[in-house]
Each structure stands twice: as C-alpha cells, then as structure tokens.
Amino acid sequence: MARRARISWPEERRDASEVVVTRFDPGRGWTLDQARDLVRQGYSVDNVAQRTGFPAQMLKVAVVVDDDD
Image (cartoon, rainbow, N blue to C red; front, side):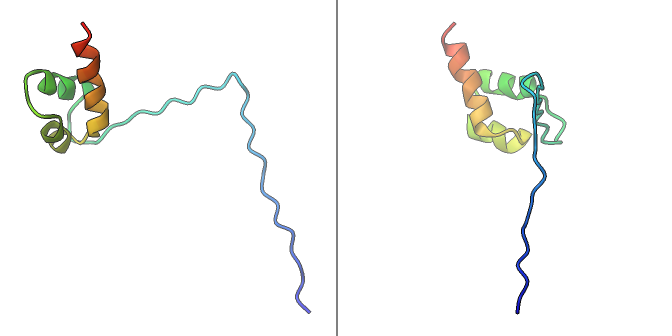
C-alpha cells in the first residue's frame, strides 16, 4: 500500500514596509533615457526596441508622456 505524503511549503512573508525594486537592463549598452531620446528624434518605437533591447511598451509610455507637454 502506498504511503500518503503531506506536502508543506514554506510560508513566504513580506512585511508591508518591504520595497521590491526591479531594474531592467537588456545588456546592450543603452540606457532607457538614450532609447527614449531616439524615439523623440523620430525613430520608430519598434526599430528602437529591436536595436536597444528595451520592450516597445517601455518606449511607448515615454512617447505618450512627451505628447502631453
């Protein structure tokens, strides 16, 4: 007869005061500001995303914010 095993997982607790910081670095030598500057100069978002490694959505946000000024 097979034994039944009870699986227990360790509890993950995070206090409300902890801050989790996530940084995105595609490792291609570009900063996010430089990539957004290329978009401001007229390069397409898709082209800049391909060249710099940053997701297009991160670059599109900058375009929308700049248009509001």
